[in-house]
Amino acid sequence: MDRVLATEPHQGDQMTYKYWLIVCVVFVILEILPPPSHFLWVCTAFGALGAAIAAVFFTAPWLPWVVFAVVSVALTPLMIPLAKFLFTPKPHASNVDALIGKKALVMEVVELNRPGVVKIQGESWRAVSEGDRFEKDQWVEIEKVEGASVIIRRSV
Image (cartoon, rainbow, N blue to C red; front, side, top):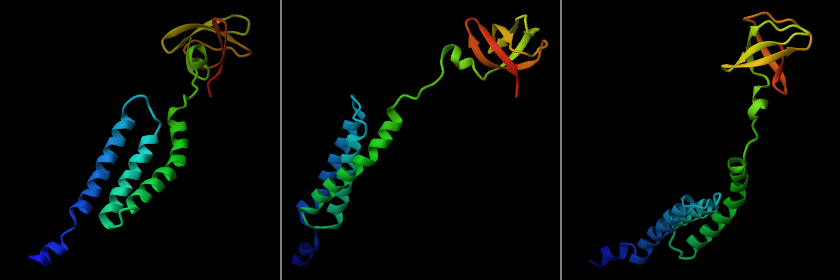
């Protein structure tokens, strides 16, 4: 009977990794809750997960704490670029600037000194050419927008 008890892990050692897993889950929950912490709690959650793994394989009571600290601190600078990438707004064209480069269908003939009409994404626009003549039903590309008119060019 003594031999069986001697080979069983000590109750405190057996519970240590479970406590670290609970801490890991708490940190993940803190990351999910608002306001966003931009991966700060994820770093500590991975540190707690590393500490739980260390607690399973090693009996030194100080080792999980060291693993927790090292992993948490080491991951923090790695997560900063990821957080900047994910949470920095990307510039995008809006309003009339979004029309530049789009394809348009000529609805009325466009000549050098006479504007016509093109259809862009279902909307009719006054179109002006800076040198070419465009026939009806010809596809063109929007070069720029000036006021309420679009400047068109041959579609590439």
